[in-house]
Image 1 (cartoon, rainbow, N blue to C red):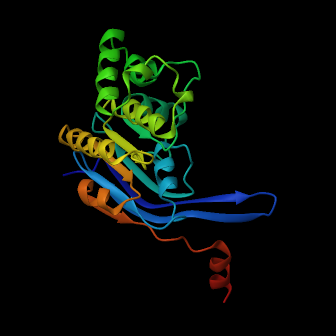
Image 2: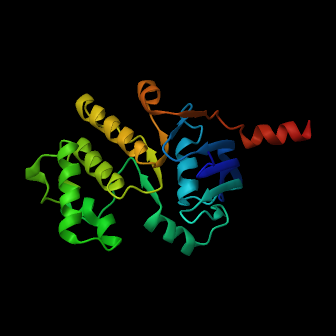
Image 3: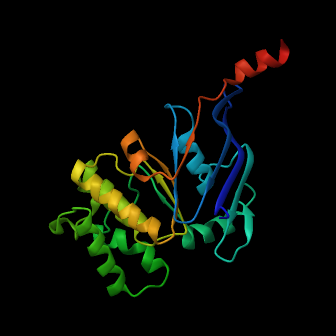
Length: 240
């Protein structure tokens, strides 16, 4: 089965201009993501797991390597070289990202926050809100909160709204950064069941999980990242 996403030699570093120093984030990452499967990223804090997801979504511009994405028409595109317009089109229709934090307009209700990705695709408002209600109920968000802006919610409630928003549109490729953080065990089990159902629909997923049990329950493939070699160490190696 051909991969929807194939990453080859991906690296990301940051330049501290005031110190003229390079800080490595991830290095030499190779992985593949397939339709109907979940690839889990594991590794210690600082290994660059979130950076990989942000490079794929192009929140970060990679420092090296390739990210070959096969779109819905079967065309291959290196996301590392894609234009801003191409990335906006992919985010709108094919690539979704559930981050650790909910970002939304402060006065928009939870229901509208969740329905917004479908509305942006032109779906009927009543239909979009109906799907949003189903997801909010499934993820144990109390109905009394649906008409309230999530800015006032607890961390766990915000994460449930965040998940509902990310899952409602069923993108071809879904990026998940600690999607069950701040969730209670019962809601986590519901999320696991929902992700399993989405996999059966053919969605490809690249995910970071904190708990090994979630990796065991959900992952079809596992890629382990290691801490990148410090740039200073690389310089010492090159000059020795």
